[in-house]
Image 1 (cartoon, rainbow, N blue to C red):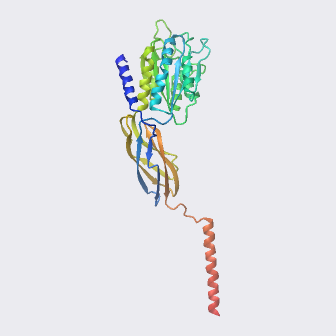
Image 2: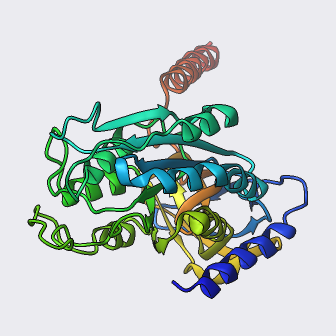
Length: 373
């Protein structure tokens, strides 16, 4: 990526930030509740839904910085640490419910004090995160590739990600990873699967202090092959719907990360509906997603529809979510009654019916007796 492209992305992110000065208002779906009765099984009812996407992302946003702290990374660590306040401030400007964490990885079998370490978990204070980044120390390693794949797998599975959060791992390093890597021999396929299973988007940023995250393990002159192939970070970022940002020097690394994160959380391409807790006995179909190139520079409304079909008599309660790029941003509740709730009289009804029959028989007997008299 050229310097011009980097600055264009930074200015684009800054321009978006200028628009986010309104108070925090959550995305919504309306009507917030809906009730209907379907006379018979097989019948349907349709309701129009309006999803409103506001100027700020109000859902939880979790960002974990995963940093290579082997010996060659010293200058890049300083750059990321120095830029953290700016990154966090920019993100919080468009995602007030954002939380950060810091983790690091080294290598395995090279005498390093650890292979992976979580320094601050999601939910730590801003000051704790800043202190953790400032305290990162570049040392260790020994060969070209590091234990990045193990670090990614551990980040995916041991971080305290918040329920329902949008999740990013910002992966910063200057060399590819062994494949497999770490004490449990994590492969690229295993690391990728763990990231996908936990709903994590990987943003990979390579530092110029080494050949970069996408280099071949055997790219350095005279170095052996360590089991990995080129474009590791590109494959992982693509598979997790993230972004491979490219290679940056220490002074522009944080600015590039900031621009891309802001762009990722302020732009979206699809708004749709989805059922939540839909029980057997009723089905739901939805109008096609509305797709395009949208951003949160302004509040936008999207008109969609839901059709509920009763398949079995009964009473059903469930929800319908408004989805932005497949993530739920708001949920409303629906109450659907299908046909007669029960075709069999309740015990109390049977008792009353029996009492009525007995009364009629008794009364009939009295009338007959009076007539005979």
